[in-house]
Length: 107
Image (tube, rainbow, N blue to C red):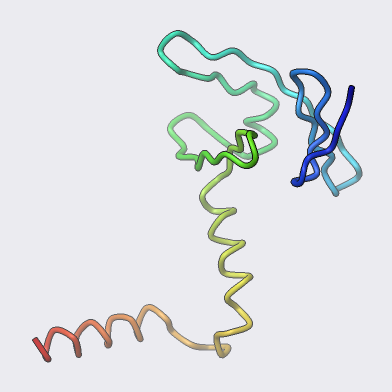
């Protein structure tokens, strides 16, 4: 029996199928966990995510699902969400540095 969870993933037996918005592409990958807890990501999945040997990924669980994300994508999502609160041209790094200097001077 198939069902769709809160994250839009279709579950059919052991498979969790994500229907991507771009060109309605659907990709299913299946792999095994080794006895020491390692998971090998299939080459196609690595290509789709733009991953290479030695890259760092973020691992997350959502409603019983295991999600692998590139950290840069997470930063892009955060920046997009915060953009409406920041004036264009604002140098947040310089502002943070100035605040730290002020805090250090206050002791």
